[in-house]
Image 1 (tube, rainbow, N blue to C red):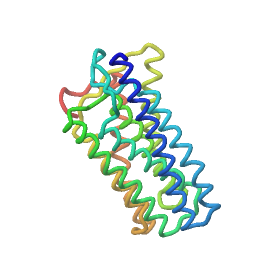
Image 2 (image 1 turned 180 degrees about the vertical axis):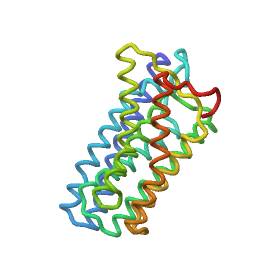
Image 3 (image 1 turned 135 degrees about the vertical axis):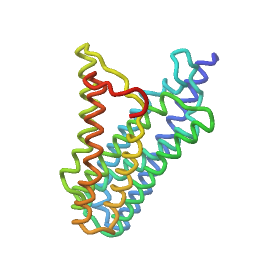
Image 4 (image 1 turned 30 degrees about the horizontal axis):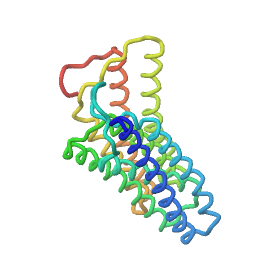
Length: 260
């Protein structure tokens, strides 16, 4: 058996194990939701949670071949590794959060959702460190990280809005992320130049602020008026950065060299 065949076999085995782990985790959490709210609510929860989990598993399967370091000649690793496993745990937490969009809120569930989302966000800071520490940063890991970040910034605010914990206009943050990617893809399809984003001193810190705010908003600790005020304060800078970044990748604003 060739080395390439062994690597593909190992990755497919790992993918099957991830599928099994997702199924077991969703069944266990569904049983917990049933215990807190009843079986009808648990059944409703399972539909969006299972749908998001299925998308994440499909995304992982589609990009398994990118489980290698940067560079077209890099040889794929034969296993997903610990860092990617942490990223997948984060994806599973966000899938679970999505299910609560169709469940009536209670204090216990609010704490659970905040813990799931906040825990997933905490892993966002750990998986990258684990990959660098092990010397196994991969293209797959970067793709999973970006996809799950974007997914988390969609499902958690949607739950917050449907539960009356976030104002509906806060969803403009989720929309901005998808519009940015769609606009960049549209330029490529039309044959227009798409420039690389330079490193930024503010992009990741602002994302961290949003994650912390969403976690706080989902937890039953702040009154709605305070959440609305804080939402406006943290939203404006992030939207401004999205607008600036699109101008950069479109070539309208190249900015200065270095961090921006």
